[in-house]
Length: 354
Ligand SMILES: C[S@@+](CC[C@H](N)C(=O)[O-])C[C@H]1O[C@@H](n2cnc3c(N)ncnc32)[C@H](O)[C@@H]1O
View (cartoon, rainbow, N blue to C red):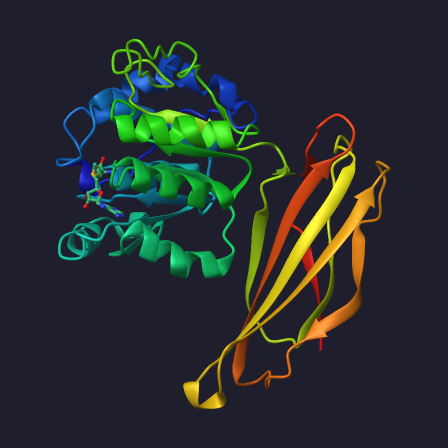
């Protein structure tokens, strides 16, 4: 019985893939792939994926070694279990958070029947992805890998993709299942058009032909219905504002921010709009407050200053012990030279003040 045993399904260490996502389609040629395909040929029982797709999920998680992974659409925890087994085999404490609004009555029981060592890798919530994001986003997550397999309608898939894309670490992956569904394929296509720093790793969109719109919807890996998208190696800021949010801090105000541009970043004008929102913990303390300020500066040299101090720090006058604060830093970039984006090695840091 698979479910009572824990073993390394392939006995294989896949070291060459973590730094080179373009090679991930080659996972189907690894010696362990056939072993994984055989192992998962009739198991998990109610997984909605072929043995080849199950084997690919296992090898992907083994190769990519995510520390933090999200799955949208748990169903009967089939792909959840495959990914959890790979996380267990990786042995570096990777966690998978999975959500399904219709899973509350079935998934906890399924997980409880797993070996404890496997359960430790998984957290389940019974929320729609949108409700899940509201709570999960408060932790400012940085995701290594997301697997979108929830509601496949365009608007749901697109929302899942832009939200998880925003929380993906530089170079991290978002995988969408069921690329043969128009909503999924077009959500990914539009997302890539809006986010040129992202790329699809297998050329799935290269042969798309609008004259044959359904026949030419392809996946990233032959025989595996996944679209695998990779985030840029740094945070890219372009004309479309990008927001970074900072939740649950107690200090009174903001005096500036720190950015870490990469060596290859472009020149231009940085525009920032900064919000400080304070929410009383209890309504009797008064109404929520929002303070806003803007900042603009030309950036003309590669080694530009990383710390920006606002001429006037802004502070809330609400009591800091009975209110909770959230800040939003929205950046927009106006390139002055060659149209190159501002590229940041990590998220901007807020400089807070009492
Ligand atoms: C295709 S199934 C997932 C299959 C599962 N990953 C597997 O391969 O075994 C899609 C799941 O998404 C769930 N779902 C539907 N709407 C959702 C939403 N808004 N957010 C999250 N999950 C949703 C459904 O309840 C269903 O269980």
